Image 1 (spheres, helix red, strand yellow):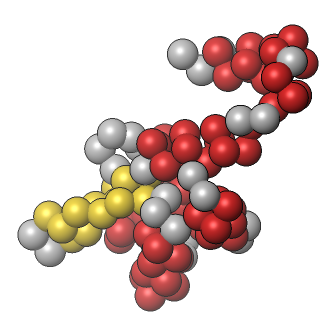
Image 2 (image 1 turned 120 degrees about the vertical axis):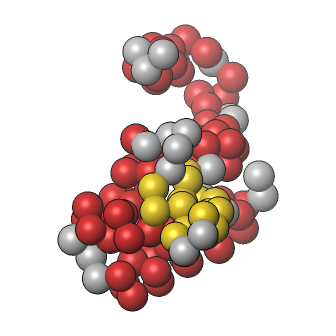
Length: 110
């Protein structure tokens, strides 16, 4: 991942509603959620939600697919993996023992 891509992704997540949307979509992987259900779940007007989903989509943090009249959104977990790897690639300057607590915390998610 390039710095500009990371900045775009982080900027997209640096807003409370978009962060909530993204976290909601992560919880609903791999099926995703229709835009209307996302808006209803988070109590956000549909037009406002559309704007937020557009920002997340342009940052490539979510993907979408049309299913007849609804659009189903999904978190792009591969993109998030790339962002996390970009942020942590030089973690602790190669001293893995310093990163061990972080890795142990992530291991509980298996």
